Image (cartoon, rainbow, N blue to C red; front, side, top):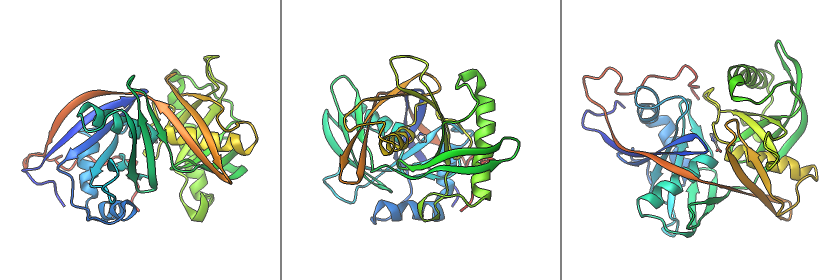
Length: 323
Ligand code: PYC
């Protein structure tokens, strides 16, 4: 599928804690009316060029996360969304969900209150309050394995926890790095090696799922917060926000270790110092994470795809992984 000359794709861009989201309002491919988990596969296999055209350079960048709005399966849901990035597709996306809610609110399509939004990995509930703060009641989070050893060339054995927070994470506490913005090249290089080593050594999430997010954790820099992170995303871009799914995975690990009680606040600082406020609820064995943050609209635009443009389908990211 080439992007047709006549294609016009309306988008609203926002950022959540510094991490950008491009919400696609119209002009997206026809993915059918099946469950979102099926529609994302239709997009992956038949319309992947749409993802690349909308998100990769020259219209986007490696940092951007896309959020394609589709018709919900259940008409009672406020929206349904498929998240994608320069490399492929995301299950859930915490900062992206906050960006989508801020966007829908800006358009007058969502008012204060609680709303259900469908994603390929399950429904989430979002609460928008008058101040603009948005709370995402995320899909269940859990720690799958703790203290897993991975041999990382040039770095030796690295220990981490494997956890699900809407995406698969490898969380590393024991590392020598200072999580500062002026160190991001070094942090990205290390975490990229960890990711490659996990894949090479067959270390996965549950049911063989690829671990495609690597999270370094340390103490917070600001004493008002509880922890700081650096998260490497699947396409080798680092999350500018504290990462909603990463914060969910982190809270699941803390709860599993008895270090986070239900209702207790967890203020997660990201690499820019921006914060998501988290907490969990427990229902039997289930851990239900909540993430609160704010997003700001940065652009309202129509993307164009002229037939003479050699890059109308986007420039493939070198980090794109074919499934
Ligand atoms: O906030 O969950 C998140 C996220 C995932 C990838 C980038 N941001």
